[in-house]
Length: 220
Length: 138
Image (tube, rainbow over all chains, first blue to last red; front, side, top):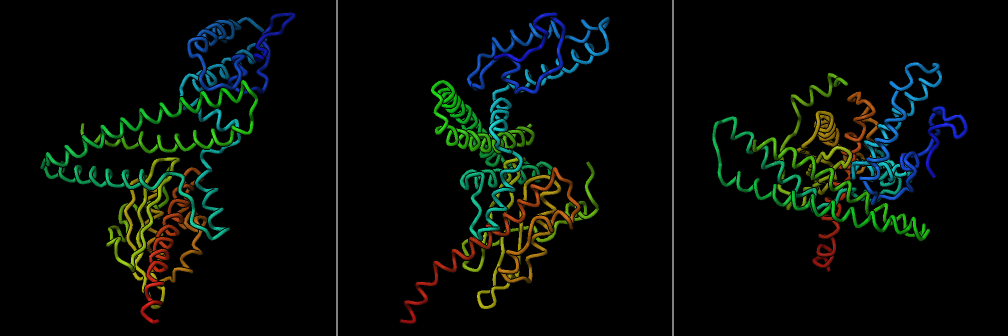
């Protein structure tokens, strides 16, 4: 069901109703969404909701068109990006991305158990090692020195990270399909596991993205 | 957002930067990360096996100024405490001391995690050596 943007009888612009971004475009909350039809919907709605079209309208309509346009832009920007779309769905499902680490810490404190790290230890080791190399490279650059072995090491790490990044996106898309299946077959019991896997993949990706950015800055 | 004076002080003059031999039985190592920002923090403690007092602490953090300041402060605070006392340190105390804004609270969480992880690692090493000690007594 698509959100109502215009009155069905008089055709006038309506205030945005509180729906999620998927519904705003009339989509079900599926992740493997067709970006071509998203774009088509976006342009079609933009043409009809644009505030310029309401320059002569009454203040109420002008305000509604502004609100609708703003929501339209936010919804489009969020849904067209694969990562933002996934994060958005996780939030819709009640997962607070920013709070996960704090929540795990609070649990560990209360139970006295060792906190389950949100990021796997092997990846942490790799991140740490590479950061050490990058720092070394920075120090050498300051001295005007150049260590070919170190550069080669960093180059190799960069390739391995890029491969990991691609693999993560591939895995994420696999989870999208699983998620979408649960929408079709209504198997809600399958959803928590899929959500947890997607969250894990996004967490790993965050690290790798930051690291790739640092590597690229360092070798420039 | 601007950093508090205490954060800037720890950032410019970080205390206890460095590393210790992680294979040593007296040393506990905690390596933790915050997925929110991609920061990574290593905190190590050296514990006196007789008194359980943390005699030395070192850290190395790759991350923002608040993460560096939080871990620097954490090493200062754990030194001289017993491991049980160190486990009492809460991220909210770090937030208060460094006047961290809400968006940087996860940095303090990371520092508390690092302390716990380092102590956890040290305890694991202690337990691993215990059965051997019992056997020698027998």
